[in-house]
Image 1 (cartoon, rainbow, N blue to C red):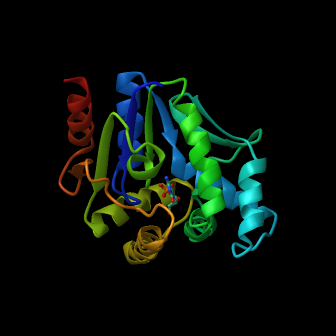
Image 2: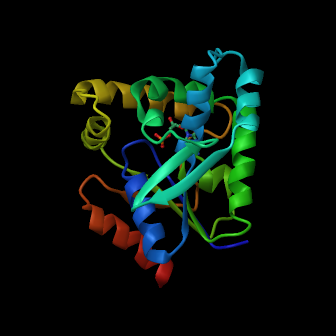
Length: 219
Ligand code: DC
């Protein structure tokens, strides 16, 4: 088992960009577990499987191969052999990913895959339940959070990158809806692990949040 750095927190907390850079600086493998839930959601949409049909959605999680690859410094996600990096960021997927990730069968399959990755590599893994459920004994646990309007402002850029123009208010609503479902589901909800270090990024620059984490791990 390698060294495990768990980074949890809500959408827009700065988790993804920070986790990627921390992994790069430490030379660890970066694992985006949200992208795994999004990829299962995309495939369920394509097969027109209703999210209420939990067994069928869990079956999809079993069947598909989810892969990651760095291409010219950009992190890509693959569904079998197809690059779905942009498709999994669309609002259609964002709207459905919370109910999909609330399905216990889906969580069990993906958590098991996440544990397997750590048997070979040193990893920085980001998500919602990494420090609480996937790796309760992780070497380092961080919980990132920020004011909701700051989080929404960060998300605007993500949507612009894939050609979707949304207002701050629309994104605040989307985030609130997602936070509510993610924190109140019965199976491994979004929750700070008791022993996680809180990083509030409301007033931090990107550089500052990365340095905070890297410093704790290195010293
Ligand atoms: O980090 P993200 O926005 O890409 O995550 C997408 C969704 O996946 C999020 O709404 C909650 C879910 N998720 C989860 O339930 N558990 C994880 N470990 C990661 C993400």
